[in-house]
Length: 135
Image (cartoon, helix red, strand yellow):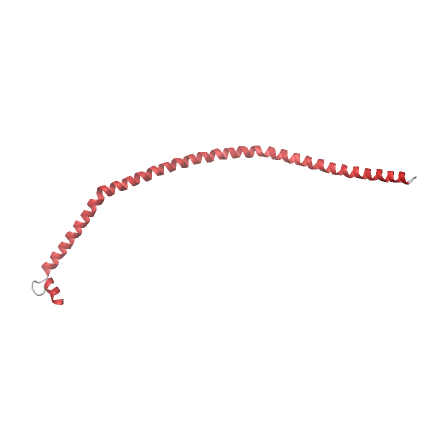
């Protein structure tokens, strides 16, 4: 064999080894793609129930939010009514109650002053006389 033929055999052997390595890589890659395809199919099969349940959940949440919106509007109305009632009470009874309290306080002070004046002796021991003497 000539050196050219030996080089050709070595090159052919190297090419065969290279083809075998590429074949192994291609086989492993095809297995990986098959596994990925299976995983995607399973994920697709499992997403339908998830989307259905999510849609049902969102429907229930929207129903509850509508109820909360109704409750909120009722509370807003109730608050407005309570404010109006408070204003009406203050306007109607607030002034007369303050006046009545002032009159009752004045009457009570006057009655106490009369009782104190009626019970104390007149003259030197009267209230005015005592005040004058102290100064």
